[in-house]
Length: 231
Image 1 (cartoon, rainbow, N blue to C red):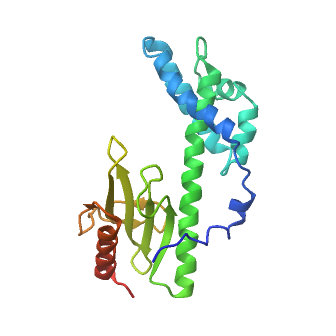
Image 2 (image 1 turned 90 degrees about the horizontal axis):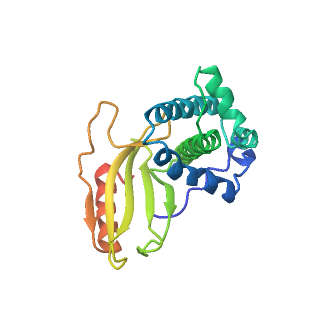
């Protein structure tokens, strides 16, 4: 039972969300590695940088969901940070407001991507329930057999219980050996997040396992499906 989920295109908000150009998102991400090293030796500047970053991130969250508000905010440049900092009573003297703005955008962009993925998962589960399916694949990417350069990931959910079986591959430092991991989790049906414990903090009954080949991995997945209910 493999295959990519096909229910994540039903939500109009996902269809209308404008894409963030790769060059722009790369600039946001690069700023994260530059901001804090530049102010670590300056305690006052560091503290105000953190406060300005939080204020800017809160401002971005307040602009709405999706990528549209991020693209509009990005166009305003350092003024976004200056405005958020001023509202919070934070002095921007000596701060790199442009860099702070890029880091805030990078952080908010990750949140938007996570929210989009969570929404897609819930849509897939709703469709599976309507179709009377017992198991459905929420996410799948990479090379099924475990190519070192194309890490594999698959997340399946047992629709009646929201229990999750997740498959991942990792490689050694030499990029020669691929290890296949299988673990259980739970899909939070309120948020769409995949979480490690249930609503009362209990961990899955079956611990995670590691395998040296895909065939053993899939036998483990089948065993876990059967234990949860193949249906």
